[in-house]
Image (cartoon, rainbow, N blue to C red; front, side, top):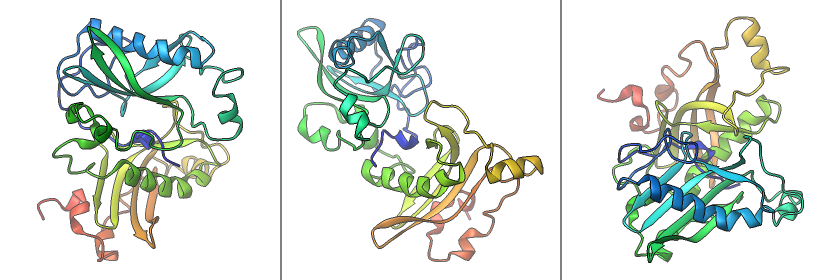
Length: 289
């Protein structure tokens, strides 16, 4: 499954100062590129609402781009947005009776994430391409379809992104490989991995080292009721929802070699010696050594 990376939640690099602080702007998200005025932000949101609201049966929606991994970037007359749709009461919209109803029934709607490319023409922001709840990375190659759009607005093209400089499809395949192992440990809860902030996501060749946090798609902590983590918590050896994982690409698939969730000790100490084929450069604890 290909998901918003964030899905899946991979950190994007902030190239500029955060502007704005309302619910439909990026106060914790990524606002790289030129400063985006309040009037432009409002116009961008209104343009997207004008496109998406009819698709959702004219429900009273807004767009959240204030969470880690979400993006609102503008440069010149172009803007790129990655966020989430919700009702003004904070709940998810209904899909019944909308153009998304069949997709939801068939299992090909992955929540209410939204991505959109905008262009400002004759003083008005217009939606060029957009997607809602896509289970694939529909926007892959969008920068080549719109060659006049500044590359700086697309987070996956960040220059100097040493820990994130892999294709979106690769990042998502890695996250899906890890989710296949960790999701059953959480009794099938709809989890994602957040590697923003102090997280780490390093890829070199066929190896990946990741440090981040396990959370639900709504940003809340998963439940540990009925899981092995509940037993660990009862024994005082569960330290929250941090996760560390080493993955290796084998026969075209990303496989979890070692991982830990909520460990109270540094279980990965010496991991590079136990797996000498893994490049030492992916381990931040070896930087400078």
